[in-house]
Length: 131
Image (cartoon, rainbow, N blue to C red; front, side):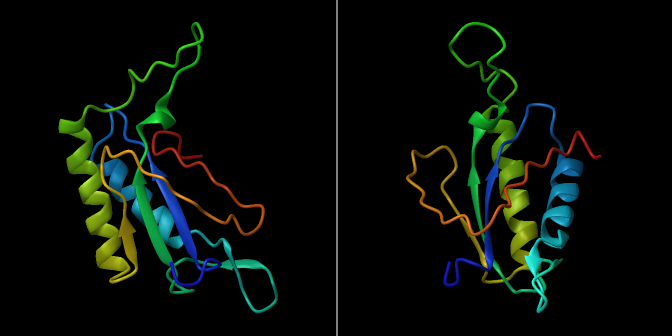
């Protein structure tokens, strides 16, 4: 990302019960969240409004269950044959709305990612919990 203050790193975890409806919801919500500062310093602008960049990385470990024992269970995480098409659909939808500003990781790869978290904003979104 060229300007680290104008972008988002999205760690995208896909569950076995997720569908295209979940992808559509998350893309619309993500790109329209008013989480960037306006001229008065108020969080009032969306990623699209600031023309920010997006880095999307698949992250099945977000669905880790630590309820039993000391070894996390990833049973809720979607298998690749279900997750890859949804991951690719998420990326394609973002690329349509943010052409040339959507970057991706490699699905299932062991990646090293560094980020500078500018400010107190880290948001967890769950398409099944639309509060």
